[in-house]
Image (cartoon, rainbow, N blue to C red; front, top):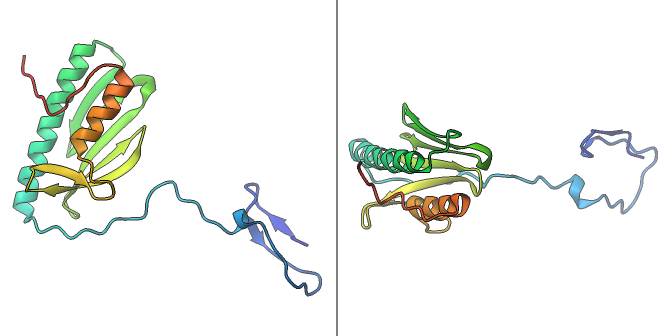
Length: 162
């Protein structure tokens, strides 16, 4: 009845030899599953200058905190890099975080090896970057995930200079 199936089991084409009534195909053949949430559309009231001020400050603070953290761990597989608005934290076999500025959206985007992608908007009232879907701040998420992954308390808001 079904003439062509792809290797993944998704119907590529269907040809019936004779008319059929009430044909029920498994729902999985017709359901598209997405690994990332649909795009968020938030209109920021921040001017470009203020966005750059707040996002640069946040990225510099994160870079400082993460460099101190990586230095204190002493693991050669762990590394922090920051280039052109993109901060990368490599944690060896635990995965890689990518945190980057998104000036067109006036957001900071996070890609986490544990929780996936998220988009953060700046909230001036509490001076923090917040994910609108769950209300969690960027620093709270990083503190929780990094503490779990590294099995020690981590506070990226606590910038300690040596």
